[in-house]
Image 1 (cartoon, rainbow, N blue to C red):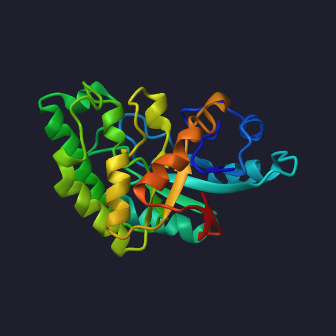
Image 2 (cartoon, one colour; image 1 turned 90 degrees about the vertical axis):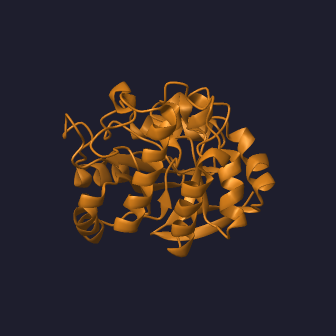
Length: 263
């Protein structure tokens, strides 16, 4: 029985799901528990309000949801940019979360979700810029617990992951992993990659193996669901992938402290 610790509700600008519907889906999937991680992307390009978050309303909304005795934690996914470090630090001083995901959604003012990000550069250049921005984010702010979907960019590239591999970007990805490990931070296996047709999680199996080989121990599991039908998406694949990467345990955070649970 696994925990899904990356999911979104109507408190995020890109979801219409109610907390209750996500809880019901998790129970139906036979999960052990969940953690909500709704989006806060400050200074999001073009429309700064789309990924704003009523933090107090969100926390209260999760508290008031009918969990029916199911284990439910409250987290947040912060869209990191170096100039936002002070604001993120202040936020996390003001509110108590169980879990904080740091993610790269905006690269030098552009979200790789949009085709404009890839204009005027090769796909390899676009991917490398994304990884470089991730490294910049980690060095500017490490107040998160786990870095989310490290190769998020390949979901949306012109050829997705057709020509992408860990080996092609090993130098910069290794720098990212070493920085995270040195700072005591984890990564996640995000099964959204399967949902997006990549036939691999985010990050890929090779990145997960490399993180473990470098000494990484903290690994959380999330489907990045924005709708109930995607809660626990392809979780049946997760134990084998993680064991093959060298993990015997996965991680769930409560009150910002990791708990290690057997696979």
